[in-house]
Length: 289
Image 1 (cartoon, helix red, strand yellow):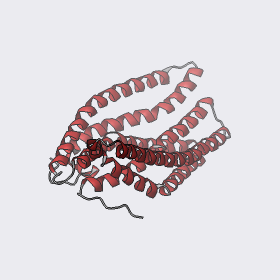
Image 2 (cartoon, one colour):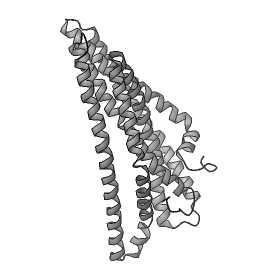
Image 3 (cartoon, rainbow, N blue to C red):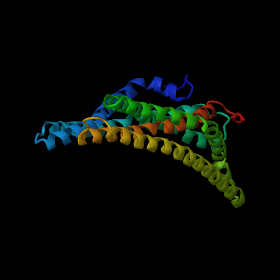
């Protein structure tokens, strides 16, 4: 199936588009139901305080449907993406002429990350994008100022990640280069080179972890600042109720959780950009300075 295609996320999506489309349709349905939950919790709170239970049972129905869809999708996903991994591995082995076993072994593991991105990261990013839009729209309905703060936080996150992109690419390049040497070093059975290899991997992983810590620390400062701003704005709105305040804070927090998918997706895409180049040609050039 993949014989005449470059091994990229895009080519996997095109070849297996019908199977992937079904799981994405279920994901969007799940996302829509998930986005409604905080709103209906607010409605249920106000209704129960006034002695009514209509919104409470509507909330229960939404949750039951959400659980059913989530179970069905996970059963389906395991089979679909498992088949894609098999086809991708077969294509990599078919094109492996001239590559050392050590290099091929590492690249087979890297190739699986393309499927992992399709199965996990990209659907989560799409779902998070829908939730962000829903959250901003509902916050705008409560007060335009709430939505402005949320949109400003999004632009701030993108700007912060842009400053880290090049470093992530170079560290992933170095880590993948080192990983390709592992099998040949193990075959040599020499303790000193193997230990040096493990220490090199550890140093690169620590540098990646430290970079991630700095990135997400800066992003969390922005997002938690947004929560505090929206809390102050919400409590000052005229005619505010307990249920409305709950909905505002819930959607602000949902925005925070969903918005975190943006840097995660960008970081994954940076790594896959390096892997894509690596598995589609026999020699990998040094990354740009």
